[in-house]
Length: 122
Image 1 (cartoon, one colour):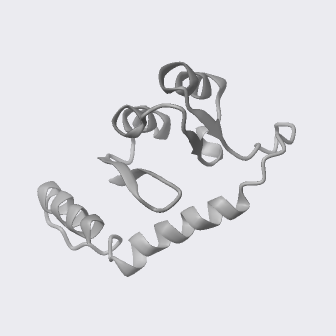
Image 2 (spheres, rainbow, N blue to C red; image 1 turned 45 degrees about the vertical axis):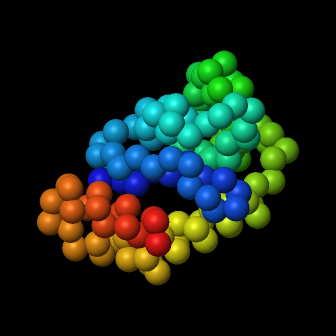
Image 3 (cartoon, helix red, strand yellow; image 1 turned 180 degrees about the horizontal axis):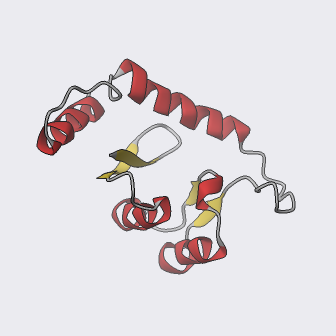
């Protein structure tokens, strides 16, 4: 299972999806956008969300702009997202380590959902 989050720059979580690990990140992101976007946001993501179709869907459906670093095979897009990415990785580290989401000890999917919900609400 993978936990997918859509959050604000201040760390506020707008939407959460617990999806199986074999689901494509972009497909889960489309579901996250439907739940958490209000329109006009800038979405900062990693290189795994590359693709003109993905970015165009965000613009057409939600008026959101996808910001991501350029891949090695792409020309430099001039975006320097290292500070924002550092904040995102810090947030992930907090969830995984300090809140114990890596070692949740849940025995069922229902138990896993309950533990994740409690940790996020804390």
